[in-house]
Image (cartoon, rainbow, N blue to C red; front, side, top):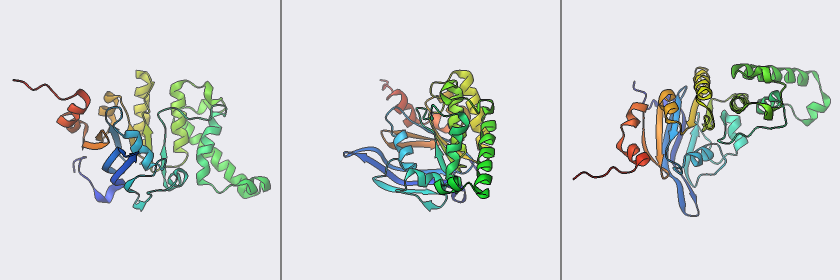
Length: 265
């Protein structure tokens, strides 16, 4: 089966005619998307194409104006971000959003909370079940720090990490929610070539753990080397999808990025 073919039995995320309007202007319009499990899927397009708006609708930050979102065979349209996280979806943002004054470990622990039953009362009582759960949370947090290669910084204040390691920390915190789908909004933004190379290896490593990836990225060299499938938006409309080779040759994509070619006489 070609990677561009849709295996309906293997679809993790589906959007059906998704539209989001702001004051009558369509940021995205009738976007239907299929994301297959355990694959790296890229969402690309020129600035203002609607990529982040689509992410925000999928993850509950914006309610769609029209259309539906299905995740793992469940309709999640209109759910709040924390409810969507609980279904098994996590994301990172274009601008790093860490708790800057907390330690690296503490940041990852915040991601784990949605998977455990602890509350204020159980923390006050501090019974055996609560203590066991706290140990389990810490154990899992350390696992994700090791996975992302930053466990040696566990007790460091987050703002003191290098830019690349802060990006890795964001990934560790997202992984701590135990997602089935991880959405990455320009994960390579601001990275140098060595950091980007390391990030690509880490994303593949995450995919190899059967976690599906959907990423927005402007670094086309990275996209073409890492993505199994690519979806292209332009002015809020899906204009192409397919493998990297297929998308590179698509005339609509070439026009969207480079402008319409001059007509020869």
